[in-house]
Amino acid sequence: MEQFQPKHEEKVKALSVDDECFYVDLECGLRLSGPRLVAVPLSEAENLAAPRNAALRRDWEAAPVLD
Image 1 (cartoon, rainbow, N blue to C red):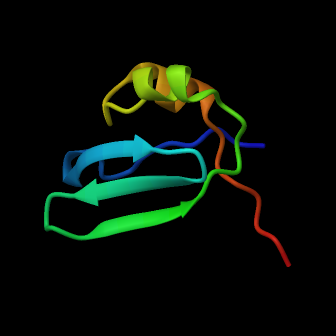
Image 2 (tube, rainbow, N blue to C red):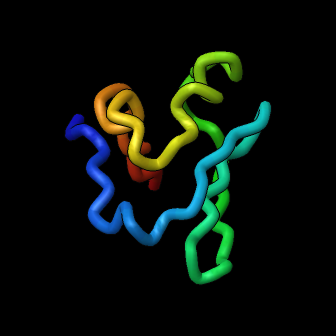
């Protein structure tokens, strides 16, 4: 599976996660959210929350499309 590569990183204000969802806050004020499909402990996910963190681009994969 191809690695996740953000194309417009400068438009992302913050990334955050909780037990069930992830959230992407955009500079324009919109918040995107979805289910956590990758099993990453919250303690590790907090370290990956910065949008420009290289670990985010290296370790997280895009979720597969489900039919």
